[in-house]
Amino acid sequence: MKKIIFIALTLVMGLASCQSSKVNISGRFVGSQADMVYLEQTTALEQILLDSVKIDEDGRFRLQIGNVSATPSLYNIIFDSERIPLLLMGGDNIELNAAGKVARNYTVSGSLESELLQQFNQSFIEGAVKLNSIITQFSDELNDEQRKAITKEYSKLYLDIKKQQLHFIVENKNRIAAVYALHQRLLNETYLFNGDSDVIYYRTVADAIAETYPESHYLPILRSQIARMDAQISLLSQVKETTIPEINLPDMFGNKRSLS
View 1 (cartoon, helix red, strand yellow):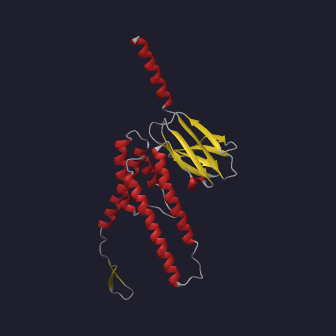
View 2 (tube, rainbow, N blue to C red):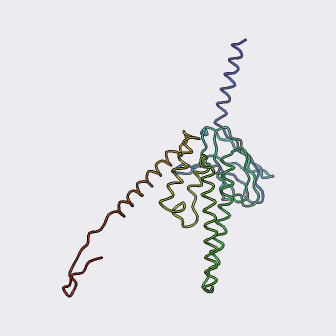
């Protein structure tokens, strides 16, 4: 009897381990003429199209993928040329719903990391849209006061967006969603916020991820980025500390002049 129970438990555990690498994604998209849903995996080097499915008459769809990592990895659901980012791990059962423009109006459940992404993207994308709207107000017909007012409005909104972004990163530093937020940039941005000081946020997230997801493939990438940023800061500090020797040369009249 004990042997039968042991075999049964072994089979159940085996089935569970097989299922743990699978992810089910279902949902409903309405308000668009598009009829195909695509699933894309995002790696450090490329984006790989994994699967596609046609939505039914009610806008419903269902996808299943296997061999998904035990730690969250970035995937995209593509619909009507827009992407919904998802952080998926084996065993997730995702429910997606959206009306109209999916990137700004979707809801997601079944994955804490993906839900955090939705929260971040909602405010970040809305902020970016508002910034672009302010930019379009500039024209040659504006007077100085109007230009100052628009510039002030833009600066305030920009700082609000960055504060929200940094707050999200710190608040969720032990989540892969924070890694995603670290790498999001507004139009024409190069740095996260303030150049050299950005390394603080990268290090904070990396240290927290090392505790939560020590096997995550994003951790070595973060460590590599931190190493490059530290090296750049070190190089810049050496340049600043180096003094240029005083040089005196005669001018066109024969008088000595220092380059300084």
